[in-house]
Image (cartoon, rainbow, N blue to C red; front, side, top):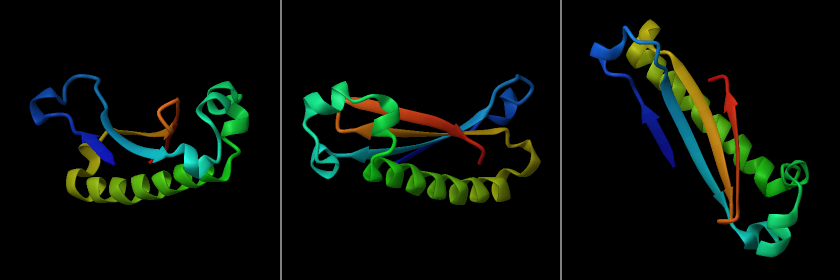
Length: 100
């Protein structure tokens, strides 16, 4: 799922960024973990799980593609910041800012 926030033209004089978020969900079943195990797992270990890595890769690909569309439409006035948020079941949130 993607959410994009573009600054209104009348607010461009302020130091605000346009923002693009890509959300991904990875289920417990896909992770092959229990909720308890997931909640206790260190973040660096969780980030090494294949389904989590794949969610981040897929999200980054989609953000880069959509950012290209936004740049075509808004040109130089775009001040884009892009973020990936991955939900590991409903127990953990992982995220990072990427250069789009």
